[in-house]
Length: 273
Image: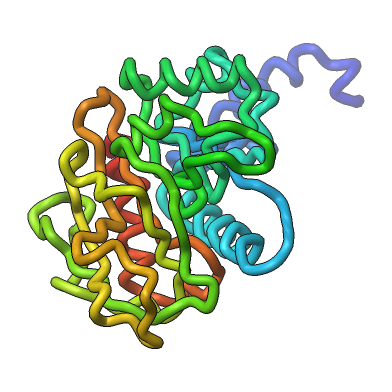
């Protein structure tokens, strides 16, 4: 007689089923079901990086920065989105980011909506900001007039010149107790940079974190600011955590452990982490 024809015998086998299930090891998951901690977790915070697209050394810096940021984000559970123009920037889009990186993008050629949203982001302290290199191209460039708001934000300065043949130089840390200087030596060498000059030192309007020693230029040059030449600073007059880092011309900077440490410090400090 088969089981299908014997309800009594089928009833007698049913109690065996729980016994079989009890034999599964404690904590084991049913087939095809992921443990709770295997599902993707949301990032701790989000970063947006605005970088111009082009050729030459500036592109090598942007490319190297992206590689470094992606690696750092994967290791520390944050996310990075990249833009190469300002058309998609508005108040709503910026609301999702703890940090805005102006990764070699100038202070002009911004869409009006993006500019207004960015100003609010900084003045109201909605997130942090790191600017590199081209962020201080303050003046008349590419047919655009100088932006007064950006000039004030960066210390009331105007771009005047740069070292077209580059120079090796020593950067001196002025505020070693600042979180941005964590892990940095009192001074370090940058092998190759343009070393912009500005109409004046931003020092009266900002907190200077590091300067370049103009007497250390190799090769020497007459293009100098005359002694006080800040290259890393923060403007405490704005609610947003902010830092400008002049260096950022070429990808070789990411072979310099001190530059990388400064970059890393700026990311976590700027994001309030």
